[in-house]
Amino acid sequence: MREHLILRVIAKFLIPFILLFGLYTQLHGDFGPGGGFQAGVIFASAFILYALVFDVEIARKVAPISAVLIFVSLGLLIYAGTGLGAMIGGGNYLEYGVFGHDPAHGNHLGIFLIELGVGITVAAAVVTIFFTFAGRR
Image 1 (cartoon, rainbow, N blue to C red):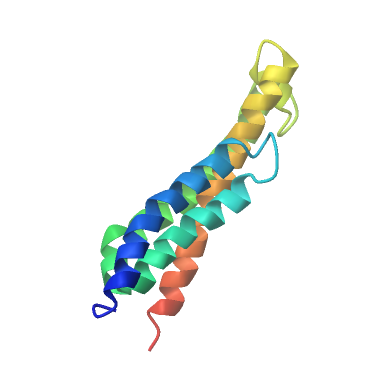
Image 2 (cartoon, one colour):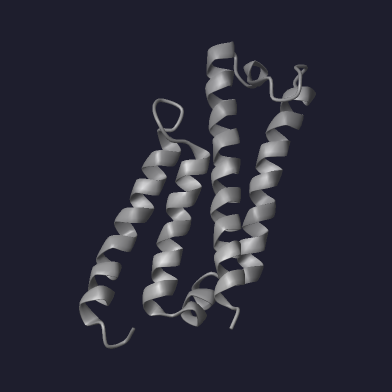
């Protein structure tokens, strides 16, 4: 797409705003529509747009598959660790109330951690799926 200058300029302009919107969706997912899954897909769409406009091989240098797989594992560990942390704190698996001095604060922190783990996992998984299919000839 080197000959499509307008498309490249618009993509460079839009990608930071897509990532910012993904961050907004992640951070405000417990207050309204959105959350980890939606934020993960939005984040992944920014990387996919970058790969489509600037070339898949360049995108693989920006997000190497080894780093993407680490993020898949990290998201899963955050999710599972939140549940295990609740059990260590004396509650049931994913019972967030034990995380704070007040159950409402603990619930807020627990939901935030769960949504963060889901967002990281979904973003990395979607990027992995795209890179897998984009590499086929």
